[in-house]
Length: 222
Image (cartoon, rainbow, N blue to C red; front, side, top):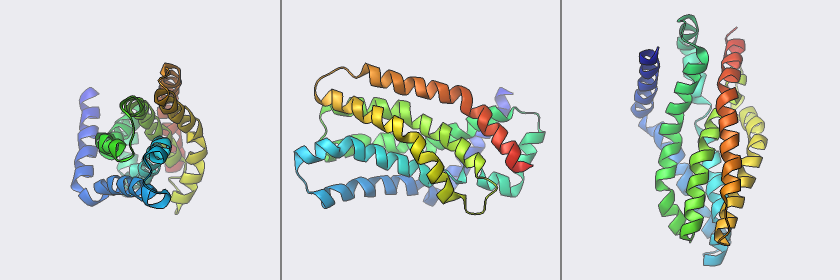
């Protein structure tokens, strides 16, 4: 079973890197959104430092949603998802493999370029580290919860807008605690509590969303 899951993961990564234009879209969108804010509000260092963490988090959230709809869509249309349901492989493990592939290809590159954007927004070193730790804990949560939303809207012809309306309210608590951690770091205060809450949210999603997503996929396939 481990070998088959590794095969699914390799397939997803190969398909993602074969479509380089779609792979670059979240990165370009992420950089453009963050670059436009200084032009709109002015280049004042204190202003940029104050809004920077929230801007990066909102841009990361919107960028992850940009390619989220394609998570199961092509597999649903070409029948591969149905074949995997009949293969005997636990569907929840398949969901985890696809979510991991999505995070590695669509979200991890955003984290790799975040140090440059933190300098661009005049974030201090403690603020950057709290932001990076929050992103490492919080962005997998985005992918896990987003997968459930995609599975629920899979049978709809135009599910992109509905997907955003379903998911964005669910991510409000994550944004609150993530930006609170950066605010605490800017004042030289401990932010372990905020990161612990984000970590707890991630572990809860890791335990529940694969089964919920698998159930939603079965409903969409029927």
